[in-house]
Image (cartoon, rainbow over all chains, first blue to last red; front, top):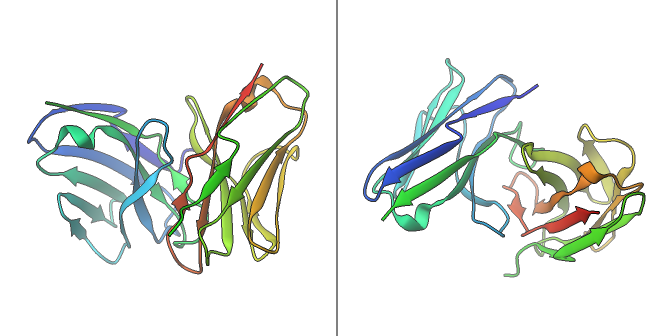
Length: 112
Length: 111
């Protein structure tokens, strides 16, 4: 049972463009939704996170949009840069220190 | 502040052998989590230890086990290794109600 569905699997965006990654979840008990960024040979690094009582959270060029009724959330990367090329994982858990359920990941490539 | 450290970086074993992976959490973190990142399967939760106790376990067979020591470091043991156990094993740590921070993993290859 895939509790967090992520799309697309891969994404190519021109430098300066907007990268959008979408996720959907099933378990309404989830209360914490982090996004992780992973570079080759490295572990996932926490990028930004949101709780379901907030519809949007912005940190620099990264924005999470959250739709609780639709059980969907998305990551927007504004002014995408080649250094943003990485694999992005959406995730969900019942608390920040509970086990994390990850989406399958999106390989993002930003064209210079 | 030192991050989560894992050792060894790479580990090569043959089928049927046993593997031991180690993790040192961020100073002050009492919880340690283990995840498996296998090709095509994504990141899957394996085990969660807090204050020396196993708090939760993912959908993995009993040959995957671990423990947490009094200094909060942790070991993951995998017995009777199978080819499908080849993966990157990631350790994360956190403190109460704080986000998890990951190490760079141990690449386990089964020949």
